[in-house]
Length: 181
Length: 353
Figure: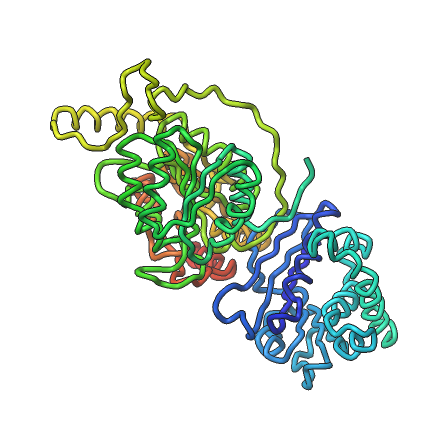
């Protein structure tokens, strides 16, 4: 396995945490992992992204340039990272906030109305977990149980009460994929 | 102990505390701010002291003072901040005090930018301050190695009574990787009988100083320092090599750039090319002899750095004209891609396999 993932969105949408959950879960499953954030003045209120690598071999470059997966939560992120995917790569688009379709015809594209689903669950902040659930339904990089174990490590033990709503968000994300078959 | 996923900068702090560091003096600068942040939070819990100094110059002189009292002490900064510390670093090297200095390099010159770079190689390995002195410079390529080198680095500083520098960059500082804090064997370190903690009327005062007004004395002092550096050259060379003996091109790179080179090599191997890697871990002392293992008909040694060619000088010294030397670098905070490095190798080999 050599999953090279770009996760991108607005600062505040939880893209960094999504990446950390994935990386931590990969580590729990004894895989080689790395997590690399964008950092700089453009982050506040602007776009934020992170690169995650989960591999059965040691991680070379932590910078993802030829991505196998891109998860984009807003339109600027789609514009910026659509080109980074290798042919056959997988693109997950938050269709609640992105009104255009992908222009690539050599990749698999999934449209998930993540914010609508999160709002139905009563917490708009779990839109990122809806996207993560959808991703894991398609690319079984790590088990959901590993994500659950990683949750308190990434968010802190004090946030453990938020695990049930986050689990619901995963399930709804996964269902959004299943429905389309 | 089990693995944890840690940001490079936080791992620096955790490793230092694990190594017994109880004093940290620094001044904020991106991209290493998580180091002082971590130390300000964690040092008081173990009875340590954290001071955010009024400037980098103050911080390095606080390090000087604490080291003179025999404390395990550290400071960290990024390129422009390390530049400001050079006077103090030269004094500490001159006074032969142990300490650990972390530089998470960013683009320069001047204030430059905040993205990763390797433009302080000359400054780190040639002595950025005045005088004939050297730091022991270690350049980790991943966070686990950085943790191990920091823990060892404090011991090396004590053993040689010399400042040790950990030379990283914004990327290794900001990224997260699994880390394990292994229990390690305690080294036999010389007793610190030179520290200035009060004579209690029982011994002659110790003096810590870098001022020698008598030129004969100062020359003797320099000769002694050079002997120390010679011993480092004999005992502390660290290098990781991959397929050096029978490759058609050997890449030389250190730190995070070496990992990118490694990815490029994997790509090239799939195409049938034979490409090796020499990754210096100690930049001073430099692993010159490792380059002797390269075969005479090797087509070239490609040095890759996030600067415009600094370690390149040491590679050329090592090769001594025996094999053609090539360079590829990005700078200003731009990071080379594996494909660009691979392209340069293909170019050297003229497309032949």
